[in-house]
Length: 142
Image (cartoon, rainbow, N blue to C red; front, side):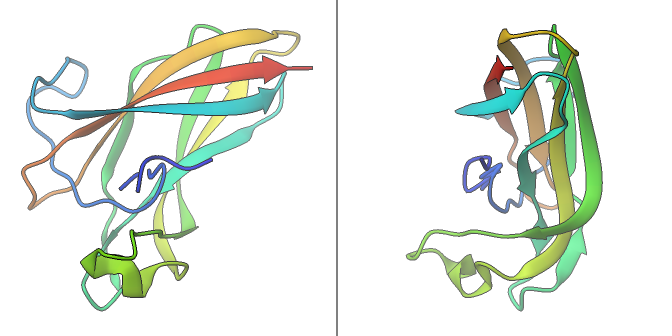
């Protein structure tokens, strides 16, 4: 699953900016709802994001952090190669599907836990006055 065309969308690629304290609600943030499924005790990639230039080259790691932690697991943000995805009518579409450096978000549910867990990821990148918050609902199965 990816964040909203993590612009995540998680996932996808995004060009956003940090505003205010990262752990507090930001009234200017664009809020997205993301659903995912994970296996109890297993690390699962929930989404990814990247900040790239018009020529599809790496432009830096976007700010990516959990502002609301899950109650029944843990979140990990990892710098790694990701593939970006943009809408066909967007200027970044020429970069869609290409591998670039970015951030991947992983969720690992507590061993033995099954049910629903929720967390919120904040995404932003320098130079663009925008913040995206992804409210992620994970169904954890055996």
